[in-house]
Image (cartoon, rainbow, N blue to C red; front, side, top):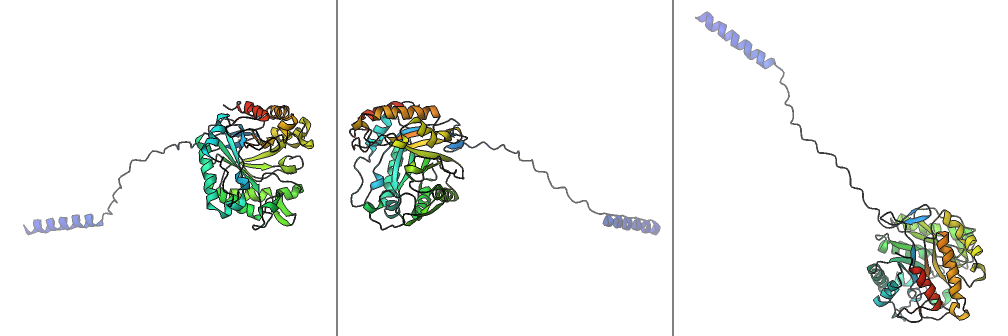
Length: 354
């Protein structure tokens, strides 16, 4: 009996020893059900983009801008206030001509100094967008490097100045979230050499800023709006200019058919027509000064816009929706939108818009 007990005890101790010597198998963690990888939904392209020599909208459709300029903000002075015609009814009447874009010329001084001015620009932009039209914001006047220079002494500065960079940085901050708004860097560069046009330099007693510098400032701020760069000779001529580096660049021309150097097809081809095969081009301002006084305006504008359409330009914007007589030149005779003889031609071509 003692032998059995002793034997059983030995067996029990041996079993306990074997159990204690086994290396435990670590538990296998539960396997989670893998989350399926989702294919990201393509996001729509916002605003306009440049593809070759064309401007493409967010739906991938080529777009041509045909419209008018509404002046008044470019000569604003706080003592004078805003022109009464800068109202909602005016925007509706422009739309009644079938325009798809309105150009607003601006002055950098009140933009910098007067919050009311910025609010007025925002209001006009909102009204224009409500009518399903696009907007071109044009820097019409710099300050010759002197923010205190009286308005009457500015006399159409030939180039932007250092303050113009701050202007465009500020405009980009306000409107850069709407990539359908177009930035026209400077209305009418003139009387400078091509290298100054591109890179800036001393001109008429002040330091000018070149087009490349302003493009870089806008893009460095994150704005992806289309940028229009006008030529020399009061915005008309690109024949001797280098190209600006950057994306979404459009080349603009101011073409007035009463100027000796810009009143014939050959001159249009030499100044900007040659660009249309490689780059998008918009006539950001056109007209015929003294058009209805000398009787030549309607035929001249008919010829210009026919050539523009045949050249494949990406738009043209008539100067101006303003009651100021043929010397202005105006395309309306009254604020109700009655066209001048030249205005009738402009209105006819606006019917090409969808």
